[in-house]
Length: 121
RNA sequence: UGAGUAAGCCAGAUGAUCGCGUAUACAGUGCCGAAAGGCCGUAUAUGAGGAAAGUCCGGGCUCCACAGGGCAGGGUGCCGGGUAACUCCCGGUGAAGGCGACUUCAAGGAAAGUGCAACAGAGAUAUACCGCCGCGGGAUUUAGACGCGGGGACGGUUCUUGCGUCUCGCAGAUCGAGACGCAAGAACCGUCCCCGGAGUCCGGCCUCCGCGGUAAGGGUGGAAAGGUGAGGUAAGAGCUCACCAGCAGCAUGGCGACUUGCUGACUAUGUAAACCCCACCUGGAGCAACACCGUAUUAGGGACGAUAAAGUGGCCCGCUAGUCCCGGGUAGGUGGCUUGAACUGUACAGAAAUGUACAGUCUAGAUAGAUGAUCAUCGAAUACAGAACCCGGCUUAUAGGCUCACUCAUACA
RNA sequence: CGGGGUGUGGCUCAGUUUGGCUAGAGUGCUUGCUUGGGGUGCAAGAGGUCGCUGGUUCAAGUCCAGUCACUCCGA
Image (cartoon, rainbow, N blue to C red; front, side):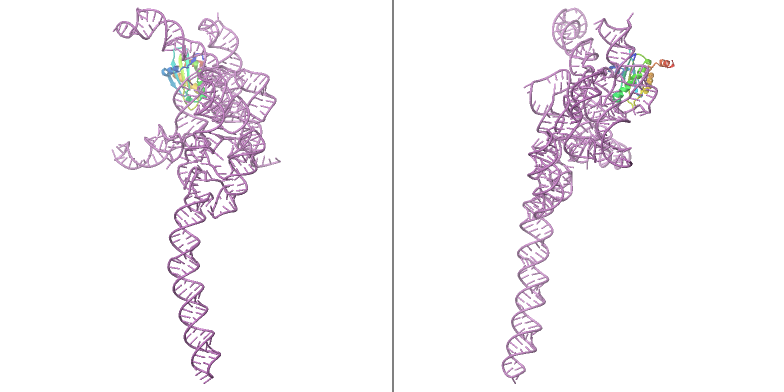
């Protein structure tokens, strides 16, 4: 990932939860907070209540892969925290892709023009 | 063909594009840095499991403790072998289940001691309620025998009366005497029957009490002190016998658990996943162990310097504070970290587990934690599930498929 | 990595020590009585695979083993 570093510390997560904006989707919740640096920071949280380690890893990978796809079109200088939600069905790649795009748009950190340009060109 | 038993195996593959961890190599007057080196980039190689899981056992490794021994606590528990070790594995013994292939078993000791066994039942680790039998006694009833009283029948004897016959006395009749027969009456005796009374004796039935024998039978219970059959007995009982089961001793085969045979005593409830006894094993903690480096900041100790300045205070002492050293040591980093009781193949030893020898291979090492996404093809692509110091096991979860051996049933040849 | 606890009517808990009496209490529920009606009160009743599976035992909520879920503590 070109312009993103992982977020690791608990206090960093708490800062985003307390001060950041959030929007709730069906499978994931997105928290966003502006940081004062040039790079993005990505945090992924999957609770133990979701399932055993295979299921949790699966969701983490899907979220990370999708973020990688959308990274070029996100606004820079933000902290992103994705929190998985408990659901009956395990989401597949396209569920996450659709929902992540929706959440990024809702929180105004998605560069629609660049996306359209790429599609148009 | 169907049903089943057992032992194993696989755990999507191939290709394309994008992306991630590690290792190696290379390159850029790229970036950071005094340097070592790190970051970025490219290429190549490689990258989760049969259970990686649960954490139920056993070890390696590290640190702490430790003269030696014992107790306590914990664990194991048929026998032999295997192993670094095991609560594991292999083979066997015994028991249980299955028609069978085969499967399962915490499988030492209940005759060292203690505890517990509700309810039911006469009685629960010893008992005697009912019953059966013997002896003694009481009460009641019945029958019999003997004896007593009364009545009747029959028979006998004696006496009286009448009649007849005969004999004798008388000539004869009357008459008298005697004998015999018949009839009637009376008395006595005997036998039998009936009735009465209840005296004595004996037996039986019912009932009660006491003493003794017995444990076959009764019903209860999970369990009633061997089971079945025959003899035996007052009634019964291993009291005796046969078979079976159990115990002890001896012998036989086996390294052993144990098997088989003989002899003897004649019986000993269950529970040790109740306490316990016996034999054997056992120090504690865990890679967040442990070792090293160590920033910011700082508990504490010591030294120096100044009463000039700052804070506290009305002022002084004092405290805070200044510099240096010692020092524990946090965040963080590095090592531990993958060559190992390793894997693959072959040969040999062994019944097997397993061992030995030789050859070959290097096969994740992350640190918020790397394996993912899309597309195409294959008849389908789907289960349980993600290494975290490392091994050996156990247990649990698991879609679909494959191989080999064996058993039973049916059909055909 | 290591250690502990809990699971019993709808809810909150006893009972597990030392196995045996119909598994009990409060609250909630249902019905009836009380009241003009409701509440309160009184009486009666229903409701339990003792988390699940197996074993030991004559007998298991209780003992043993395995397993599932929840929860707590320490490094």
